[in-house]
Image (cartoon, rainbow, N blue to C red; front, side):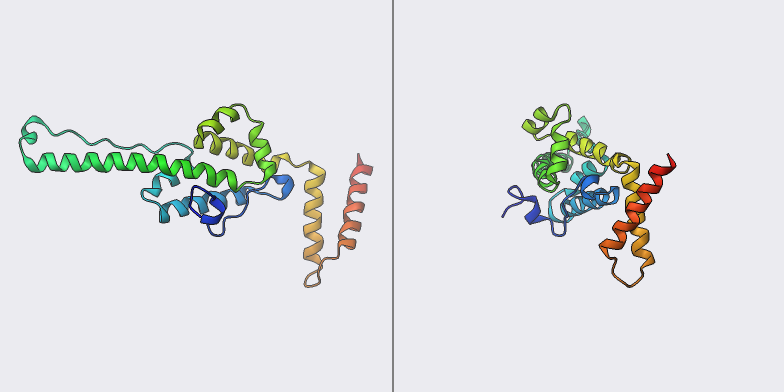
Length: 195
């Protein structure tokens, strides 16, 4: 299966990025970006350009070759060097455009349906999807992820922390769902009684 057909098949170990409600975290998002960046760096020509786009959420700047001066233009070697630099410059731009198309499908196919739903509700989604705008997708995905820890209701956050504490206190014993549920219910009741 080619890279353009399926991102999941091509990036080994890439986990589906999930929302907070599904158990996703900011750390998951950082790992998600790292896996995609590393894939492009190691498997694509000029993949570092895509890694820059993923991490910085902006296009890299390509330095155009400088034309030789009139005196240098008379030298064959200067002209050959300039032609070679131009060829490399144009190949890099073309490769970057091809890799950006692959990037959009990698990101889209490796986020959960709930995350996709959140992205689709954002202003500009229709146009971004039509043009496969990678920068728009990454920026909106980043803004959704930035809210990961802030979106969860305080009671749910406390419940999660309490569950972790109960599991830690039980040590090597496996946390029974019954004891976790009992502790969670008593904690919720005590929270509501104090209000």
